[in-house]
Length: 414
Ligand SMILES: Cc1ncc(COP(=O)(O)O)c(C=O)c1O
Ligand SMILES: Nc1c(O)cccc1C(=O)C[C@H](N)C(=O)O
Image (cartoon, rainbow, N blue to C red; front, side, top):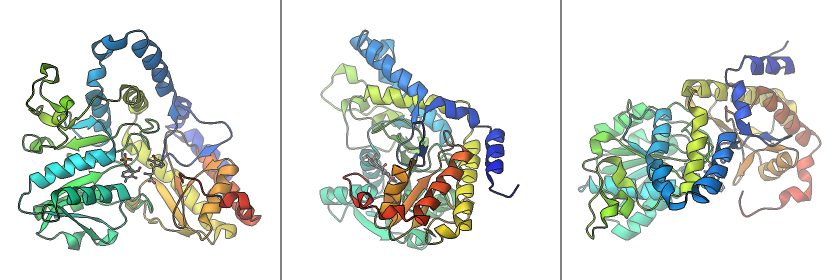
């Protein structure tokens, strides 16, 4: 039995402690889903909750449900389920809004805590919305109160100068999958008086994160990727307990008021992280995310990490061994310790190759201009899927199936 043979993969699936979890998802038949890094699969628990929330809670119990079904507590209850996955003690994590909006809130709060400095440092290859939010705030406050500075992704440490107020970094790079050392960077930044906001979009639920142990200041993350909360699921935010008395955010909507149902004219922030809420929670999508999070209840993040690295390892090894795939250039770090749960490959025809993969039942994604991205969600993927996906890819390259003109058609969303 050679390393990576079909027998090996069958055996890896048999020995996989997470194997039973695939049954917790509705994975479309005859498809191999390598895009859980963009939109996670549908958990059965989420589907059931969607029906219950719509038919019973909304349909029958109507407005009584705010209390009867604890709708009002959902930002906190779902937040605490995520807290467990990101190494946050209770009382620091809530589910609300999108990452973009949460960055606006946290960035504003952090800049207000740092009156004398105004530079927000981020990485050149960061996900654009993170940078756009800084640019928008800079336009509103003026460049003398907020200005964006970019450093090369691999040169953050030397850019941590004494004029930087806030460091805004994505823990895992959305293109390359490169992973930052959260502990080391947080320490280096804080030693220079810099507050750090971590974007956990590509790490929450798949890469071990220890926000408290790293003494992180703030964090945001995504509900629809590895947490499988569904399209447009609410995001989350984290405010370290030691900052909660001081940190104030500008989107002071009534849900962040200390007594929303007093309907007082004057805003008074709720104590703690609750003050970072803004408007009415999106109950249906938040309920779905809350149910999706139950899939993690008996799972350790270390197990998820181990399996996702093993899945990626099989993919990487098979691609490297196939002469048909020699033109695919690995962009992600080879060292497991330096990457998240995805692999990125460069190829001049990456878009058409990705479309051909999708047409042949392997869902991957493409990032302009030339990146084929594959994600390894450990809860619903099997090792045998990985073997098959590389076989499909090899066939597409061998027979040049990607040359079909149908695969050149660009869609609005890629
Ligand atoms: C690193 C990162 N940040 C933010 C986002 C998006 O944030 P939002 O929830 O505002 O759409 C994504 C992907 O959608 C992302 O990959
Ligand atoms: N949020 C997305 C969307 O609304 C449509 C399409 C894709 C997405 C994504 O999540 C993109 C993703 N953050 C990325 O890493 O590329």
